[in-house]
Length: 477
Image: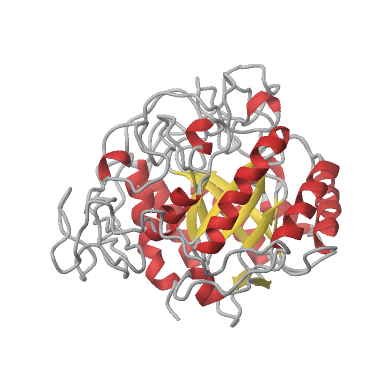
């Protein structure tokens, strides 16, 4: 995402119809609008998130109190209606046609589907609302059986532990017991699936951080990461870094990675470059990350976010260069490879995959209001059938601009598909910009814990309900 005023969409899919519509990206649009023309991605500014649709439930900062584990807030589920449209863009809107950074209009949106999404219960197994999966109706507090505390039951520092911290050489201690990394350990790619240290298929669910301005980077701290892990049940965090901000953001990225390790969750280090390949700079950066973290099972590397305006052969050559640099230091952690047209055509990559290394997976991005499953699902299905593994490192329930209608029904269609195919995903994003895609309100504090009033609705509440509904299975032995 970024704070530029607008972008004109690039790279129309020839097979999809295009409808010129002010401010909406087409089904060929990118997931994100990026700053200063560096990539096809997010406007940082934007209006208030769309109202409507409570998915309700027990309060997010007031759930359960297990001091030892930090507790997990319960989010009980009522059906949330699709949200009304929000304000100006944040998360993308580059689609077909036009030049980057010219501030023109976007193309073809597509009508929202009606209906809401329910996520029954939503309470986690480590405390929170009632043992039956959450209290009943909207805004109903947890019962005494689950226990509630004003702070969400987490440790003041966000539940981080001393175990599992990194050393100067990049080695790590044992992951905290009962955490995602403690249960699953080193991940690898087998066929079209990601599996754990025991060969068990694993789909991880969590959030993407936000690097475009201080409304997002304020959460790049150990306390916030601890609460995202312990209170909101994120098994994985995606950590973007902007290539033109390496000097200021590299320390922030390392702070978040260190906190992920301390809390026993996985981390995706995301080179959020967009259009520009930057193979040399990316190689240097990822070598430094692999040197620091290559001996921990927590880390994955996403080496090119949303390639745009270039063909797959060009993208593939870039990947081969950066993969080789990482593998010289880290031989086994998973590397995530960007796919053409803003990570929306993994089928093109699957037809000619990178074969110079193992433990490679490919990325796919979607925004439910803009990217309908009927138009984009077949590409992912073909990619899986070709034998490559997929991870959705960025998605949202709104438009690709990061604003507009929250399409709960279409988002549920995508979630059903991801669940059926054991595909992990990280939602965009941890921010307070007032956009539909933001999970936090503009008044949310930067360190956590967070109350229900600090979680956006319907976006934040619906997304966190889904993430929390997956956590118990994620940490099951």
